[in-house]
Image 1 (cartoon, protein in one colour):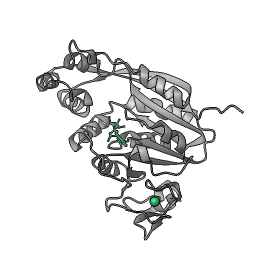
Image 2 (tube, protein in one colour):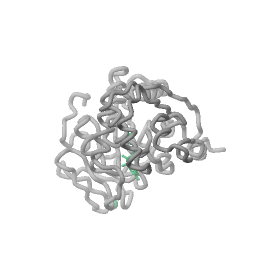
Image 3 (spheres, rainbow, N blue to C red):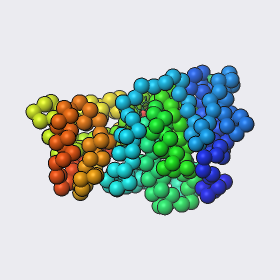
Length: 300
Ligand SMILES: C[S@@+](CC[C@H](N)C(=O)[O-])C[C@H]1O[C@@H](n2cnc3c(N)ncnc32)[C@H](O)[C@@H]1O
Ligand SMILES: [Zn+2]
């Protein structure tokens, strides 16, 4: 089946890739039944939503991320604000694939409203059209996943908990984690032997201008990701790191959306959040570290 055969909102991708799934309750293999349910060997059953995603959540999650935050992230991404980061991640993936044909599967773990994965898939499909790229996005939030289906119908979107990822072992050539929490034990389990984990985290300059205003004279004004980098290295062989730093031009609407999309504003006094939104920043700094990891080499 070629990329163009992938149908919006129907079960064709789930049908084709049903063997990739494992039950989030008992880990046994799953099958697509009647074109609409994934059912495991022990008959745990998860139905597809009519809108074209599947929830493999075992319990209702509590989330601080609501629809307005996801819509703001979506609008900020649509304005191209994350493009330099997504360009680098896509190039980093291209540099790490061994063949320009065949099929490559990537999981975006904590994909939110899906626009990062969608934009990465578009880049890769343009740069290496002979490869059959499969994108799978997983997030705890159904609100996020519903928006993701609208963003890109040619990917598989699942509501699921990273602590109980509903996939069999060694399924993915790439596991991406972009500004999201990680479950490295699960990432390692799902990553193919030669696969790569790519984790992007905010670096010290990320949203510097907003941070200075929202957290004047508090410890949160400074941000260090040292512990995140150290923890990544405990699970994977860190083969590369790179820094992506740039400034994005602002207008008042974009600035408002950036304040809305970021958990940065959650702990700050409302008065300062309003002040930040009204501030006429000409540009805002974006600063990320990208870590590339491989399965740890086991000593013979
Ligand atoms: C800061 S947002 C980043 C979303 C997206 N990667 C982006 O950069 O726009 C963090 C995301 O992680 C998701 N998340 C948090 N805990 C999770 C878990 N245990 N399993 C799956 N997703 C989770 C949240 O729902 C949220 O969408
Ligand atoms: Zn089961």
